Image 1 (cartoon, rainbow, N blue to C red):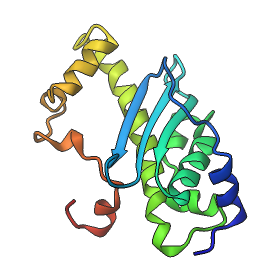
Image 2 (image 1 turned 90 degrees about the vertical axis):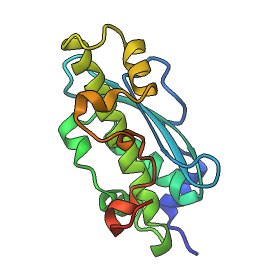
Image 3 (image 1 turned 60 degrees about the vertical axis):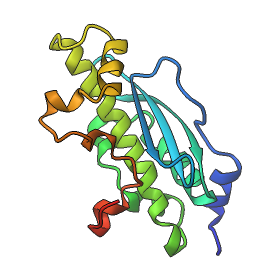
Image 4 (image 1 turned 180 degrees about the vertical axis):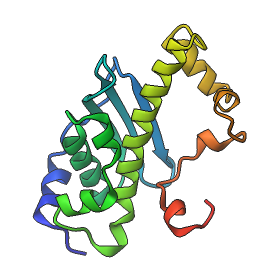
Length: 173
């Protein structure tokens, strides 16, 4: 399996690693016990327009590490609408390609980014609407599985944590 120079560069020197302590949104995707896993935190501008900072912790193969690194580099500083439009193909292209059997790793990075932004915006909306009075109360609502009550979703749908490949393949995970 041959990786491009850019993949090797991001694998050996991943950018934006870590966890923001003052994050606005967080995502956890993948399986930390038996496969690739990403925890991504984002800091969103006060006007809800820009992704100001991104940090992540990743466990996985070189492709998973490189795709998460490059996704954070591309998205940091972007307008939220543009960051949400980032595709796995853009991530693969930014790395000058990936081996065919590793392209699914780009889904993990993109989905983690989307979910972290979603979490940040939803938290702010819930606070603004008076549904919760603090970030801690929002986190407790998520932990208790009660977020779906407000979103009109079936129980368990907010805990979907695969790499997103089930959405592409149409198979259930």
